Length: 339
Image (cartoon, rainbow, N blue to C red):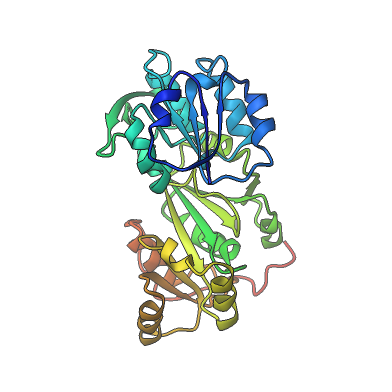
């Protein structure tokens, strides 16, 4: 279920060992591409960049990024100086376009192994005026950028995403923020939904998926950005993601009926059991039956408390070494409803 849009490299792409259900040949404006494929279902779209009219103008690529899911797009770059300049490549990454290459053979690899933000810009300095980038090939031949930083600043963008329905991403994001802000500069943002408003914390932020990149850029100077992705948010802009599973029988059965490959897709990812009543023996059984590896087991937590030892332990495991293990869970006002 792949499609391709070709121009200069039509012959090379014709020899690619990939199945396509649709192919268009020529030069098209971004509007024409969007109109033709906005209601067309496809797995991946391979775009010969020369098929985009005025493609050396980065704003033309930006038009596509605003109106299409770029996680499904693989760009085949040409060998022009502008397209391969550090600035142009950096702007691609800033738009959430991570799958690009000059190597025809790398396209098949990227279809099955799409890049994430970490792959293309693990140390991305979001202040564009403060960095210089250089290119670094991958073992697959896929084109990646490796920033050379003028100032050391490792921004961590951590997504929290529900795998089972309503697994608690909003509350966990809030609680992680409260733990982290003791020792780190941290911002928490909810994407698309607006449940943060009910937590009565004016420091919590809200944005939509179209504006998330801009939000990250505006907050590049903090240590951590926690992104509440809820059930459907895209993980593309996150440097790492926590995948939440509430291990209740009904929710697990719903997940498997919806997607029998759900746990296969989570292999190698950080799976968090959230709002869990499982003990260590239960977790071992869960891992055996699901053929998965659990990163951490988080029990039901009282969101009225100011501190949770179990979350400090999780965050230290994630690499936040400044935190101390708190031996007591202390709260303030019981409900803090009337703020």
